[in-house]
Image 1: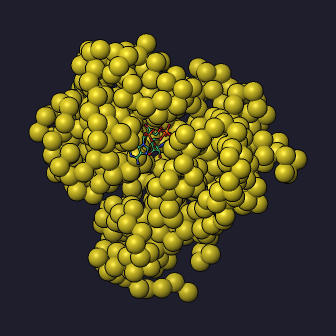
Image 2: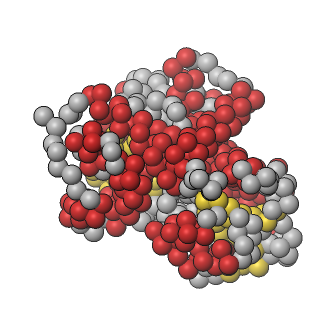
Image 3: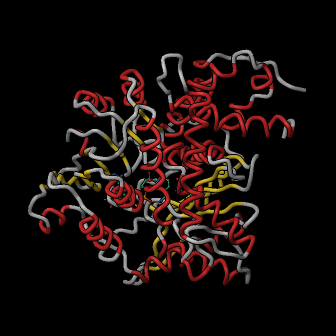
Length: 452
Ligand code: NDP
Ligand code: 2IT
């Protein structure tokens, strides 16, 4: 029954490249995982015989659909929507929805693939999925956003469900968009179920979900620093992005005594050597979510800051801790070398795959504390998992209970990384640890199911 086909890493990647032409982000994400999994599978023939990695690297399904909507001027607009259901071996498909003009099948396949390992690492019963659209929310009115979300859900609703696939937010999708989509799902199906997470607190949302990704990433950084007898206290922190993940990472870094000095968006970054304190973080949050403003305006509001334009990124600013929290491939090999040259101690990815493969290799070679997104940013989906549990039980846990559970889960992920990533000299390869621990649980479930 089982195939005995056994190829090496490069043979495997040649097949992935042949089957996914032009899908560079997806191929990159698969390679990053395969580099570790091939070594781990040596001496474990069942994973090869049952083609486990080959099967995880082929989404269960990719649904693509047309989304029509009408703008305020009365024009008919046509967008493309997707849901990639990567793997549901250990639970319902789970993962966010991204609305950004750059969204395409490759990006959503990479995100759904990564999500499969990340969700496994949380220890909660969630499979991996991701979806979204090339819709650009920037500059749209609230009514346009609502009409788009309703139209998107009118197609998506038939593919999701509380026990089937549970989407949430990601870039361009926050509480407002989740509200519009949940309202439309409820309207179409007549069901009030936990079919989306990241909902408002009034209608089944969970406390701490908004903060969870950023808080969790800094909690993970603190765990990493602890292995070297250090803490966030007094550390200079460079952050990219200025959305949900970036602002909450900054908030927790400041709470733990760190000095945050940068934020960015797609236009550039601000550098505030005076330090971005809680008051300034609150200003950024309001500016980005309520006023939908640009980060450049921070430098007009706070005179201690400078704005660096032309899409500049903050990696040249000397720091102890770097937290990339914007988007994929925003930190390349040269950026990684600059960070290392300036003495960076820890890098934790709030975003998904923000470091390109060259950058990953630079961090690995320099043996700094480097946490990949699937470990460091898992706090968001973890509290989404807790939102699902609360919805099923029809109860709401308190802020304290949820914060405790989030921190316990992040510590659990750290321990799982240690299990497979600790080396003889005490160095921890978090990339290897996260890839193997995430893979093993999914792989063993797949072995139990046979060939399906
Ligand atoms: P938001 O939409 O709240 O913020 C995104 C931020 O990243 C903005 O500052 C945005 O700037 C910037 N950004 C987005 N795309 C680009 C781009 N192509 N180039 C440069 N900057 C860009 O999203 P989130 O904070 O939720 O997500 C940020 C990252 O974290 C993503 O990688 C996401 O997948 C990941 N993540 C999110 C989780 C969550 O719970 N929300 C959970 C785990 C990971 P601009 O306004 O100019 O577009
Ligand atoms: O990348 C991610 O983990 C998210 N965008 C959150 C997914 C979720 O289901 O909460």
